[in-house]
Image (cartoon, rainbow, N blue to C red):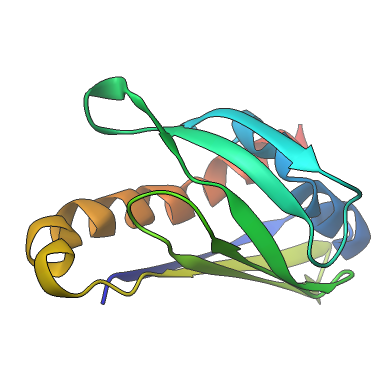
Length: 142
């Protein structure tokens, strides 16, 4: 089962950091694979996003998702609902000296042929996604 996690400290208050991540329309600023994204409804629990990400050969693939946990300033989670792989993601936010610690964990269940053929590229993609938190830190602190 591919999984990846990464933690960064961002020099901004938890409310500001949470609001930034809670609005998925900010994702293209820090997630290089996002080609397009749009929110369906107000920000909050149960909201959905239509998302297209760069896939193999640069072609656009669907990766729509739904917010499954929304606890302001502390916890945000989602599940991908479209696309060949449907990971879950979990953000945790914690106040620290002079800012906020953000941890993102991604997990994907693969079985059968998908597990055999896609485990390595999925792991690489997930590693890249969580590493992009470093870019989010740069954006939020600039």
